[in-house]
Image 1 (cartoon, one colour):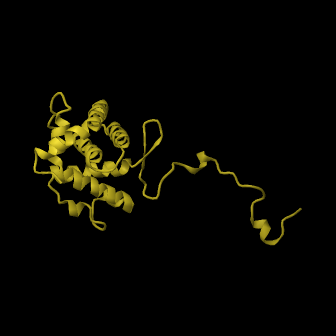
Image 2 (cartoon, one colour):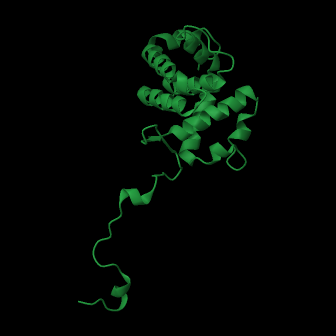
Image 3 (tube, helix red, strand yellow):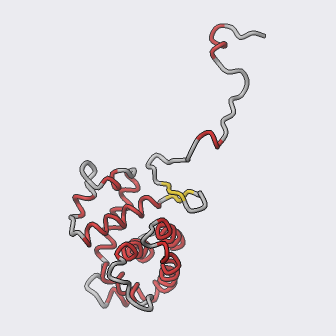
Amino acid sequence: MQPTGSQSDRAQGPVVVSVADRGPRRTVSGDQEHRDGGDFVAGLAARKAAARLLAAVIDARTPLDGLTDHENGHPQYKALDLRDRGLVRAILVTALRYRMTISGLLARRLEKPLPPNATALSHILHVAAAQILFLEIPDSAAVDIAVTHAKSDPRTVRFSGLVNGVLRTLARAKETELPAALAATDEAP
């Protein structure tokens, strides 16, 4: 049977699209990054943006409000969707508010202090610790994304095991150590 009229413009039978034909998978926000094995990691772009902006605030003394402005903010922040922007802002505000508490709890888990030039590593640890200690992010997700983040940065790739160990021990000890650490500083909520 020959197609007639508008039927001739349509393909006959089902159209099959292979996954390989579609290219890399993306979300609306572009907030999926590759692992080394090719898997996607949801939330990695938001954590990378949080670490980058934390570095700008702490190291370069850039105002947080300017970096997180929806129109003129940091390009890495503006590339995220609104939910991820909210997460980045929550992480940053928490990491900055409780910076001394987080630093103290992280330092207890390190055999020796981080080198002064390991600021990228310090920011990855602070972003993850803020999520583990103060935000309602599952500990395992915060640790996994931080390790993936460390592996994706040439400056921190060799410290991925340290990131994993420090954050896992922090997650296990948070219930007992966090109240005392907050009481020892002026950062108590």
